[in-house]
Image (cartoon, rainbow over all chains, first blue to last red; front, side, top):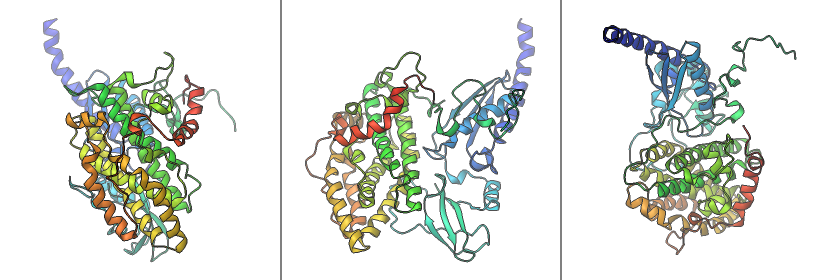
Length: 182
Length: 310
């Protein structure tokens, strides 16, 4: 028994390490249900992945907005992706702190957003003090994802999903969405 | 449409994500099959914190959000313009999410706060709290429950509500309850958008046409009398503030007054009296008839199916 354990421990550790890589790969490749060109890794929704080398995996994800209805779909998709990769015990856990921020979206994610007609977010407001009131539309340095013009007017801070604002390009007159900073 | 009974269960299709493969709580189609919003979150109650008080406090903040979310949802397909319809629905959804997290936190802190359902009921705890409590069990402030009125009245209500809530959430970031602190930290950026939206519309309506001005002044008459209650302190809030978990709402009165002054100066409207004598009636479960009507709408379907799977 003892000798088996001695031999088994490093093998177990190796298996866990390779399972962790595999689990991370599977979870990172899951796409967002509302922005299917982006993966959970691109969006920064995926926080941590762990595996025990014995068929078990734990994935930590962070919801974008408190009421984002996509989070249920994301949980189910992560669960399915890992089971399809051979993990038979999958747990998807929520990580609320620190809260998700658009600053977590990767460079690749920002490029893909723009390529798909969604203006990527600028830097999120930071600071622990009171959020200053803004009586005029917040100024954003953004470009129309269709014609590249930097002249656009805000139609609404609220769009088709919780994370987007609506703009209209004053050069090409096309409406477009902007992922708002949070 | 033909249906192939021989289809493989794991066949790739656009519906694949809707299928409850393992019979667990992962089914989510069309916003249903709610899973636990605090799954995997450590919900242990911090040492020395009274769990019944913590649950009651989370219900207060959660009910404010849930009830106003329901009110705002009444605007869906009824707002003056499509953009405002979308905006108010988005704000409703954010508040619904905050409400869910807080009701789930209340249930985890003190399971006795959850109304009993049949033992075989699949209804999750936060839904039991939302759909199976009577009016007297709700702990929201009256401001959240008063009827929408016109767009001006809804705008002024949202302004007052989100100025107050944002100030509370900013303080709650430092809560001794890490779950409450995280929920607050998450909500701040959301409510800041709500507040700015309401503030801009307040100025636009008040400084717009003679008709919009008249309506906005009438809205202030209807909404402002509910302001003082927001700063009345319920014993649970007092105790939670003393325990470092909650905020006594009178502590955020100066911050709220400063923000409201900034908006209402630009709108040329008078500020509600935040110092008027008031008791925390809503926090104690005393409500206007408007809440019973709202809950009738919101709860009747769920109550007819206490064993329902949604």
